[in-house]
Image (cartoon, rainbow, N blue to C red):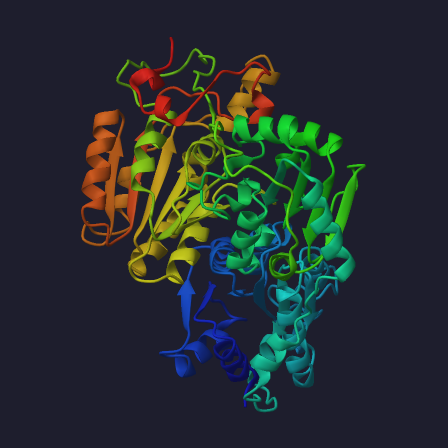
Length: 588
């Protein structure tokens, strides 16, 4: 069996359905094998840029809790792919990246796109090792199966992350041993599991029994746990629940026990509850980086905190009263559920008076060169209120980087059948375009995806919409078009006396740009600059949302985003019903 064929058969046995990538001279054997032997079982997905391919694999893995696979050729293709792989590494997302390399005989001898590290060339192994859990350059056919097995184990073992295989072109045609029919099942069964220890079970049980106001914070790591075990744990222990920004859907947002999102774009009421009322904080599946912990730092420093995760390498050491339990989250919670003793008497209406609050929208300082606007001008918060009526009840929601993403994450309540994703590790603009495609392409036919992106993100990665067109994916890409990198401008206004540099540009007509990517029967396009126009546009798209759509929202004046570092301590807050009133036009 040729190595290229063995690789495809192995991916099929792992139940991989799609390989996201861009072809080229040193990866074309992989795509040829996909074409020859993969039909009906596994398909290649052509991204428009390698970074988009990595983002697609990431979005697939992040939303479906499965291994995502991407590929690229050597040279610039490799470097472009690594831009996206870095996001998966920073956010602990399991992907397998397969990168072609020049023929071995030409390494150090003038090979095109040589990255052997010889004769003053780029060293691919060193580059890839810096942003992967496992990286191996395969030098002989005999190394293939051990390397592939180790790559899959590393990617799927906690903490999750990328594995990278570098395969020289000449090796794809070499013979390797036949694929064992039990290879995948044996491999997956060998993945390490951190079983809960009796002492840890007792410790957590006692801490819960002694607490009167315990709060559970669910991070992205909890999404890999058995969700029924998590829900039962919460209900049995009458806990209030918050989610991190990267796991907003980890608990039903309409449940009375839900406090909201914590973090820089979180709910003020959730932060206040944790800081002022909680007497025990349990954190499952998150290391609480600064983007998350800053608004709840008071509570974390003054209350007992228990961190639960399968890996302790990234758990914080800054909180004096921390206890670290290294265990598979679902297994630990299930042990508590099965063997729990009577808990402290906590009233069933412990959150009876709780109301989730939001930052009241306010205009950002006028730059002086803003376009004319009227009371009818569409604001960012008004647009998000309207979008809230069209969130997928079965599907996915993606937030890109920037002001619009922070505002949307802050305001929106995630439907129970919907996942919500944001890339906070590297935080690069444009992730949501590829991520949304990867999530949707691995979903049921009756699902839908909504991606909220800024115009800067579209300028970087917008042509991935064409991939959605080719695959007939029901994804609505909503572009908040304010002719600037909004968060950069906000910082310039707040911290640099309004001196704005390299953050604004001429407004782009994204509806016209998008219309070049597909005919009207394969791609819906629209534009809105007022609330009424937006209402008509959303109604028009969703009356038959069977294809991709691009909605260009003209935002003439910026709002201060509900982003904690930008807000004074006395910032006004409101409840959701107040958002739906015309008062969202603000006080001018």
